[in-house]
Length: 334
Ligand SMILES: NC(=O)C1=CN([C@@H]2O[C@H](COP(=O)(O)OP(=O)(O)OC[C@H]3O[C@@H](n4cnc5c(N)ncnc54)[C@H](O)[C@@H]3O)[C@@H](O)[C@H]2O)C=CC1
Ligand SMILES: O=C1[C@@H](O)[C@H](O)[C@@H](O)[C@H](O)[C@H]1O
Image (tube, helix red, strand yellow):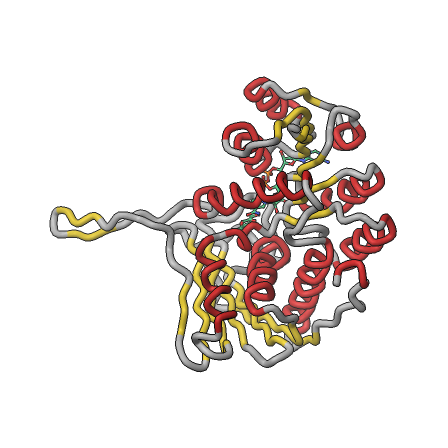
């Protein structure tokens, strides 16, 4: 059976997901889309022969739609996810699940009350080969207990709407989720340091920022989140263990030696860097909802990431180290 998918948001990643669902993923087809930018949505609708709906709500409630992908702006996510839960439809919501811990908790409570797992969050790094290998090695015990993690998340330039808080709750949230998943434990506290500021950043944008996290077992993490590398999209992660160090590989890239110079390409953005991860994420999501239900990052993971991001933003504003405090985890997610 082919799953009929509705997509809300046909901007950069929304269109990319429609392409992937159409050209790469098997067992699903996009039948509905919506975007408040009607002109662009109509272009995408024609390109992929998908029916345009005036609102995301119409996509969600359409009898022709079995499951929904949310790829609209961050502040719209929670309301659309809650509506999917009401409509009892599976939903893959791009990160972040909501723009605050409160919004995410509302989703957690609504999903648990409905008694069926319907929500998956687009933390696609969990499907990246490099991160999966790091996790496998950590879990094998080969490098002993992890002690520290150094990482960086560099974007070439930010989008025009990017804000200082979004550096943590839109970009840094990937580090927050992937490192918790890698280590298999929650955070105890967090802090944010400001480096010397980049004068090329958008007006008023504080950049770069350094997120410092401590896990419950004492692992120390430093994560540079830099929106203005200007040279490319660069994701680094090094785990220092008791008996060895492991490092996330860069994407495969040919070293070119020519005219007395050696060089290799650095990718421009997330759509290239994580292309395979998104493909795996979507194929597994489609397969899982046809079988026993979604198995990827869930609403609880979205909530934990949001609590952590909110706490880091508070810590940055107060220049303090803040405890990261979670509500008790509902048995539904255990
Ligand atoms: N997992 C990942 O690596 C990535 C995730 N994202 C997430 O995907 C989402 C979209 O990001 P981009 O595509 O980069 O942004 P974008 O700005 O290119 O596209 C967002 C689209 O949502 C539309 N939109 C806004 N409100 C809407 C509403 N109420 N109903 C329907 N459409 C609405 C906008 O008109 C726009 O076309 C964001 O939440 C972002 O955090 C984005 C890039 C990578
Ligand atoms: O999720 C993403 C974007 O929304 C975000 O703005 C970028 O910083 C991230 O690298 C990308 O993966």
